[in-house]
Image (cartoon, rainbow, N blue to C red):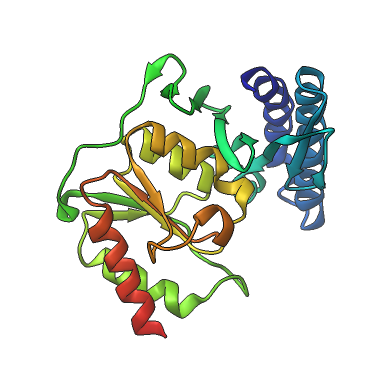
Length: 258
């Protein structure tokens, strides 16, 4: 998984170096990024298929492809943080998860501009390059920095999100919106963020990150506490100490918007 990510990242970095030259064209950058996305996905598919030819795939660009091994599939986002990439902002990543019989058992999130390889295996722990990761130890929301993703244009329920944001802003030390759900979860695992929440995500955005947070000692759940974020796309992740308080704030905001 790490080898596949590194190989695909070489192409992304080359393409990222060209983005600035395309900013004068309204059509050009979007088309260019789409090409970069597809090239990275093609490389990842080739490398992962070479390693495990029987495994199926669920990929952001090309969708689901069943394998002869029905127990395993790769869940891949070849470029998480596409808008950042498009605007020349160096904060994007490749995300790869391995699902076995419906459970995520391994995950890789690679941020190529800083050469940060976040990875985790179930029962083995979470790491960044060769350093073991642990979620933060902060126990008070007033000291916590929380990551989030903001809905835009017609996507998502804006009023519900704004009410939740209002609750979190009024209670914590700060909210950050950096534009990559996978990296937001990796940052929770690394203790850079104390927590994170977002609504309406796809499984390829969060599959690897969910395992990273859990293997780093954190908790991941749906804000309601009842559903599976991998199925619903609504997620709150944090260390154990603040999780219930953070989820309660998000639920309170959602109720007010209802």
